[in-house]
Length: 318
Image 1 (cartoon, rainbow, N blue to C red):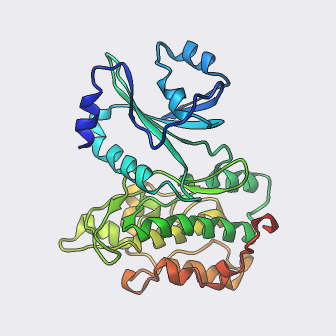
Image 2: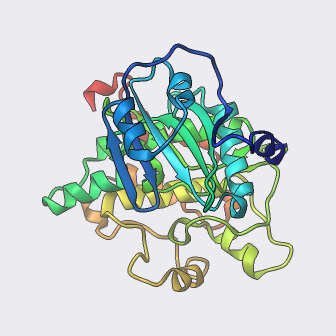
Image 3: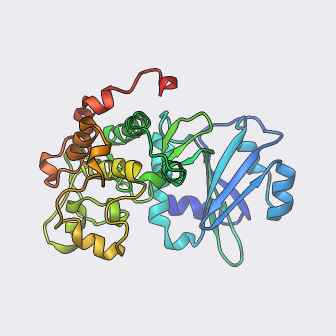
């Protein structure tokens, strides 16, 4: 169906494929255009059109009342259709949550050399939590535990929304957790996510980013009849907690292939200096990175963990 939608608009040089609502035209907009190594900012529609070529105004019409948007530009569309379709379906169906960026529409830009898909969504101008923790460590300050707990709790809310709809994220990491200008936490990047029939359903494909991948996910590449469930996201959440403490995930100094070899064989990971952190934080990590995923908790249990329950309801206190 997704391919049919794209083919339907193949005769247009720049066409709206999908938009969730109809809204009024926005006279000016700040656009962050991201893709691979490029990030460009345009203050007005006129400047954007003049610098990017002959584009139709439909993009800006359908953005509507939005003041700022992010555009994820995907090249080589034919090679990544499955990945794009998965992200599109999740954004279309599940972006109505406080911890997932609002989805504004999907556009196809045809070009004689290379087609592009543009995914327009809510701008998270605060950057990723990875950038935040690294910036603090460079200034000689580690992340405060209360801030880590807040980020993890908000990320868990987004993950719970996915899990409630039987979706595994499969790429939870600091780079995929963004902050808005107001400090809201948003979970992004659903290209390798997987819809399952129910919470207990299993997968057997090895996907994700090596340093954050759960042992059972890695095992699917090496062992026949091995599978996993949505608790692979819990492992990645635990590794992300370590990343927020140390600035990098465990084994980050190794080649990714070497890390994939060691993760299933090494003891469960933890922070570098345990004496710097509270028992509650260390225990939370320990629960997340239980190597036997059958003994690993689901999110609903983790929400009751003391490290998470300490987060105040009023986040202005964090």
